[in-house]
Image 1 (spheres, rainbow, N blue to C red):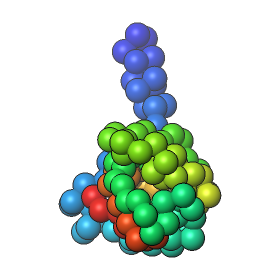
Image 2 (cartoon, helix red, strand yellow):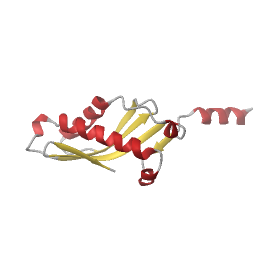
Image 3 (cartoon, rainbow, N blue to C red):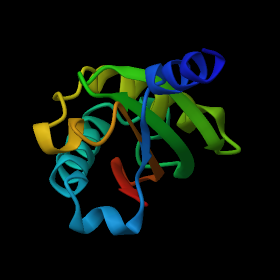
Image 4 (cartoon, one colour):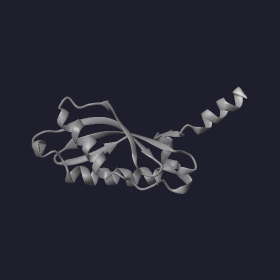
Length: 130
């Protein structure tokens, strides 16, 4: 009885999958590429006005995306010394939400995809790299 309750509790938890270099050859690859493009386009459109042409910065963050495309949370792993860029990265994620739902082959594997990227703000462009 106790074992059954433990198994049921474990099985009810969401399945997390973390973005990794091996994802390039998995069901994640196309989803991650579309995610990157969306973030970078919005990043260029919403580059911090106070920094345009004058300041650059880098922020590393992890975005936890649920299978329906909503964001569970954003974790700042390495903020930029200038909080302007850290706030801009969070704002860009919120503007991009919701993301597309996971394709079936990805949602069969996971409930939440954790996407870690370093965001580079420079010359009114945003680029992201694993």
